[in-house]
Image (cartoon, rainbow, N blue to C red):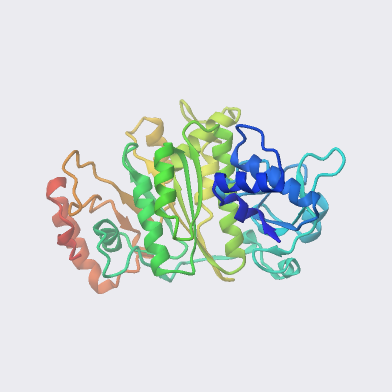
Length: 405
């Protein structure tokens, strides 16, 4: 039995050598997925079993495709067709991870197809009847603390967040940062820290409107940390940015439906709002000139999904947003989310004097709402006095050691 996922992770040279050994003619300049598709076609002609393992996206017409996480859920030559009958009979939803054997296209068909489905979310398909869907689950007040980092961590940035903005499972956390600030770096460090402390977490990172080199760096840094990474470069069509973000969200919701804890790290809500604005017709309702009211709805719907569920499972969302001056589009987008967060992290512009011991965050604005703060009441007064002392200093003189870390 051959796994399509295993083939995708093989070096191109190894795939070409395998094709030559099997007598498969590979045309020049084929992409990696197209080379794999040629090999799969040969496997299936010889009646060898090939299985696929990916995430389902259901299209408006009722059929769907199995998208590959390694290609950030974008369409490829190896996506398997899933029939409307299979989707209806099992009540499959967008975001389900499904596994099953492939069959070759028949007649006028253009795609590989699933002959049947073996597993859904690593369980038998019939077990889906016992699952309470995400929308029917009851959001409750978060009670379980989620640590930014271990007590002995040497990451001063995450340790300062642990002191200033402690969080819980199911929280909505918003990181306000200048547009040029390296936000993917802190998301990467956060993902690595969470994976180290909470091995059971399902961590998904969705980074859109990114520089290609930043995408490569993030993937390399998290290659051994079992994180699902979905990305789109800044030149990607806005429709693609919106669709992969939605699929990443649905993927995390399916984890919650199975009683698991999921974390979604997204950069950024500003980019998602702008992509939505560019990919849809204007509604005629304006928050301000240049910002359509419906454009921001997709980002709000995403952010609103964070919750701890009474039936089990939780979804924690840490999203970044561009800081903006009042009257600007970025400022208006930022203001739209101001009242819906559990925790806010506000980056301070330090100019060229930033170092690992300088506090990167505004000590007053970086906080968790009192009703959501897991800090013991006996320590809150001390922390509040420390915040005021730090706020009285110039930004470049605020040191992390003042927080006792």
